[in-house]
Amino acid sequence: MAENEQAENEQVENEQVENEQAETNTTEPAEYEQRKQGRFEEWVIAHTGISIIFAAFFGLAAVYGAIAWINYHCLPCEYNNPGICALIAKSPPWTLLTALGTVFAVLLTWYIRSVHRHQELDKRERELIERRRENAHREKEFVTRCEEGKERLFNERYARAIELLGNDDIDVKLGAVYALDRLAGDSEKDRATIINYFMALARRIAPAEVHIEQDGETGERKNIKDRSTPLDGPTKVLLQVIINSIGKYFSDVAEEQRPKFQNIDLRGMRFIRMNLEGVRFTECLLDNAIFHFTNLDRGEFRHIDFGSSTISSSSLRKARVYYSIFKDGIWEYVEAGGCRFFDSEYENSWGPSVALTKAYFAFMTFRGMLFQIDLSQAYFDDVRFEECEYLPGEAKFPEGFDPEKAGITRLLE
Image (cartoon, rainbow, N blue to C red):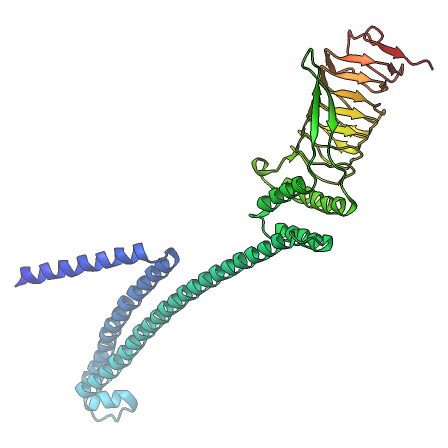
């Protein structure tokens, strides 16, 4: 029988350990720590209460026994002792048992109330944890419904704006573009999609038909001919609004998702205070375009007719220009350090505010240029100079480069 009881006790203990481990694995860390702390406090209360009861019981028994013995053996019976001494002297066993029973009942009542109160607190704690779980679940469902509602509303607004862009009224189209611009600002994850759609829309409403002439003998590119139909006024307004939206969010889109300006008629467009770092222009028309306070660092320009464009207070650091034409344009306060020019024609003059530190020029043709800037750290590779002049004292060329032998005439002061 003893062995069976011991085996049952061990089985019960093992089940308790397994239950505790299961609670540890399934309960959240904070809740588990609270339960662990609660069990420790319960153990302390239980063992402390038992110790207090036994200590009080035996202590009172010893005190009352001593008092009873003194009164019963040391004091004469004829003395009418007042109070508890007289009571003990008259009937010592019943008084002692009554006192011990009263004290035991009081201590037992206190112990039961303490344990019950602790159990009640533990129950309330479990209920609170359960309510928190329910509230967290409801909050998660609420957030999910809100996200689904926002996504549904965004899709409806996006589809409606795309539909309005098919309207013939220019005012309706402008409203649709502004609506898409607002959507791009509200939804960061859909911003790249909207910006790329804007670029496709610009390509559709303002296509650039660029023909690149080549030399019949050498096969080299000679010129870029514009065969595009001029844009009407309303289309220019719509295109400018689209360009403004693209410039507003261009830098917020990941570099691999940024759209490319390709085959777009951008003549007369304004690029004002835009961050277009890493932008790519291919076979676009930029005659009379204005770049003001615009970041074009690391940009790439291929087969571009800059025409009479203006670039002022802007940056072209480490930009690359291929097979492009600059004619009668204006460069003012332009930082173009490390810019590389390949097989392009430049019929313009750089003002003294243009910085071309460590610029690279290869297979270039400068025609009618007035050099009055510091090019001492630039590099020239197979560059032709036609009817060019330089201003002594202001124009500086790389070491070993003789401007007059290269065909650059000294401007007389």
